[in-house]
Length: 147
Image 1 (cartoon, rainbow, N blue to C red):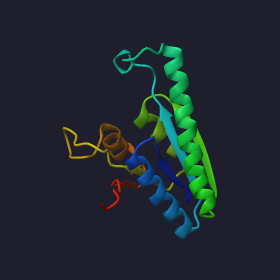
Image 2 (spheres, one colour):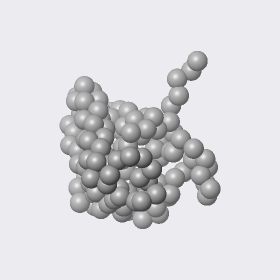
Image 3 (cartoon, rainbow, N blue to C red):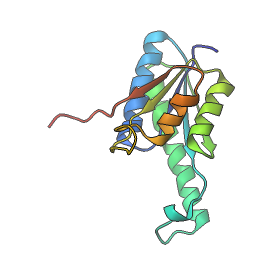
């Protein structure tokens, strides 16, 4: 295990809040940051529009790359050493695998933007990571600008 902070990000306000907190922690601790996003395999129930499977997969990949670029830009602006990785597969399993592969000392994730059925605002992926991670997991709420 090392001092690398792994931040799990997606294209959501909550995901970007987690990234901002992770960048701040990495800066304060002089720790490297590793951003990861996971593109899930195609599911028929997710394909509700006119895109075919290949187009949808391509858009997901490009979206994931854009998210990682955003987090990398934030980290560089803060003077934080940063790496990133786009993974494909089941979100929680891929996040846990990535944390093990890089020897992360902390995983930072976001609360979801909606109430869930089990624990309010803790999504199933976050629950699975919290259950199976071998390092501490910091779960970050989404920040909403005051009106």
